[in-house]
Length: 136
Image (cartoon, rainbow, N blue to C red; front, side):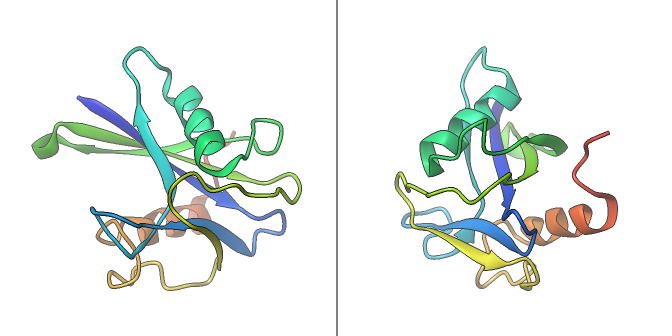
């Protein structure tokens, strides 16, 4: 089963959430969270930090990630690990492929016309609002 990760990055004040705007399919033109593949033999959390660094230039010293939830898609033979964290300070972003932007944490993340993931982003944000980041 192929592993992927999805990383929710909140601004230091918690008022904004980092997104990329997809430049290709799937979800071309829609907002998506940053993330990518977990390589064979790679730890999921390490992969999340690697993808975050590659796609945004946010490093391990800038944020602490917490493993919040997973989605398993048996019909697609893949799983998605969801990580969340709040930046410790402002960071200069460097995009790898897709343009990066901050959106208000109060957006309608269930808007399937604007956001990738068939409503999953809305679900993830609601989980953070209701239950926190998963840290104990």
